[in-house]
Image (cartoon, rainbow, N blue to C red):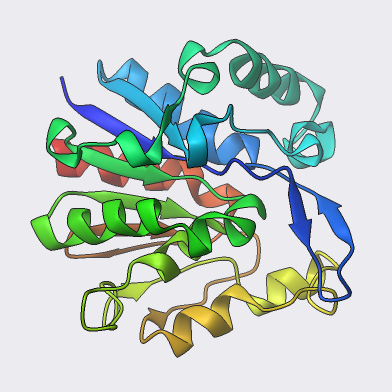
Length: 231
């Protein structure tokens, strides 16, 4: 049995370029699909957020449209609402990484609001990549990698080949012209190599101990890759 740390957003609003707030949180399937896969494999999960707040789920991610129909939407909602781990998080500042075997970061626009600039999250993700620990990150979750800055000011994930929610997908979703910054651009500026697959189709990249998924559809395949790393 492995212990997997879920680093999750505590933000329920995303600040847009004009200063207005857009409701957000974590994208349900990006937490639920890996959660189900990891639990089915017998692993233990701990959720950590900034300040230990209960991670808010993005209401839009619970809709039938976001989940391929009402039946799957009901399943996703049920797990998000009832999984004990999602409702009893610890604070990121309390995390001792040597107690865990892997790290998973779900997306949603929430991480762009808080994890992208959270020092504790950055510390955890820096330690994880340096130690060779498996790290899986999906969709907007790679925003958290932006805070993984080393003592000399370089990015701990610079030079890694990853994928993330793309500029094209953000445009198709209707958010690109409203955002303060775009994730693909910011990751590229930080020295990561962002590989782009077909919009909204499953796409996973594995580079050394880092596993990334481009979008919600990549959540299941990403979880499978992390399970392979855990043996």
